[in-house]
Structures are given as C-alpha cells and as structure tokens.
Amino acid sequence: MKYQGTIRTIKDEVIQVIIVTNGDKSKETELTFASESPISICQTSDGIFAPIKSRSCTIKIVSKDVYFDIYSSVSHGTSIVVNNLTTCKCIFFGFVTPCTYNQPYLYRNEIEIEGVDAISTLQDFKYTYSLGSERNTPIASIIQHLIQVAGYNGKVYIPYLGNKKASNNLPT
Image (cartoon, rainbow, N blue to C red):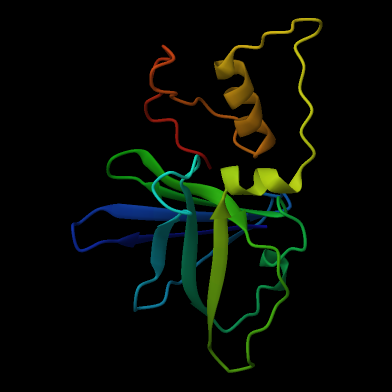
C-alpha cells in the first residue's frame, strides 16, 4: 500500500511524504496531516566525533481509519520518503521503526509514525562484501553497496570521491 500526501510550509515550499508498505505500490491512499508540527526531522548522534550522523523522522497524520499495515516488525518493512518538491531534493529517506501498534481508540485518530534513516538500519544486517578476488576495494564501491543494502537504489553524490551530483532524482 502506498500512502502519499503533500503539505505547504510557511516558506511556501511543497513537501511530499510517501510511505510504502512491503514494497507494494498497487493501491494508493491520500494522507491528511496533523495541524501541529506534522513532520519533524531531527539529527541524532553520539556527539560531534560520531562517524555517522543519523536522523529520525516523525510524521503525524489524522485519520478515522487505522493503518495497521504501516507498522512492521522488520527494519525494511515500510519505507518513508520526504521530498521537497519546490527544490527537487530528498529531505529524508528511511524506514518505519519496528514496533507494534499502540494507539488508543478514538473516532478520529492522530497517528504518529516514527522512522529512522536508511543508514541506521544497516546494524540489523550481517555485512559481507567482496569484489571477487581483489583484496583492496575502493571506498566508493563499499559506500554504494551499503547504501543499496539500506534500500536506496538511486544515484548518490559522495563528496570528494569524484561522483557527479544527481539532479531531480527524487525517490518515489
């Protein structure tokens, strides 16, 4: 199931949220966002010397239906993409935090969906990688492979490694 919605910010930017459960985009449902801080993206780390600066995303939606399929028990069960359509940039790409559904029953629910960025989910996978018999693997190949394992198959700009920056390549 594909859940999709757009909002306009105070700066007049159009923000699009796409939530896909189990990779299935056959059916679409329009999302209605909560009125107070519907999308918040925070950077989390263990300090300034942490090797990876990961991010989390909280999306608040309002619905009279209960979207049980959004919640997943596995790291890559439900993906979240937040795009800025005005600047054609992907703001956040990640997955819903594995958890159980625990919302109280009300006629009109405000559902809060927590997500972590794709790079944070790599801790849930056993990593083995080899380019055949080569002993020295270029760092760009390892980074590209890890990003694909994390679930993103688009173009990636890696600074200082000579890649061309991809433009207008938003995940859907």
